Length: 128
Image (cartoon, rainbow, N blue to C red; front, side):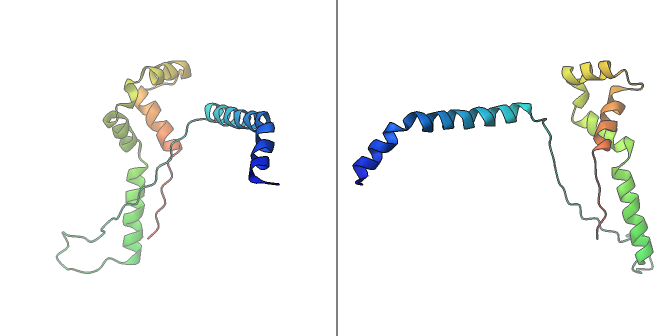
């Protein structure tokens, strides 16, 4: 079989290739539109747990370091920080979010409601 005959054979099956291409693109578009939108972010924080106010200059014990890290994790997971994120990013100003808040009939403010949603999906790992 020569190269020219090979191209003629492919040309004879052009409708098969085109139908497979259209089916693949349609499936990709359908999956993209039907999947829920999720956003994932990862950040690494370096916390310096030296006590700058300590005049003794001693190194904190392992127990103190663990306590310090747990305090930092608790701060990051707090409702107050989540509310501040909502205010800084102006998440409550979206009309769609306001409509969803109204439909949820939640008590409290919209900022607290959005912050609670952020905290529900927040995961903080305290590895050293």
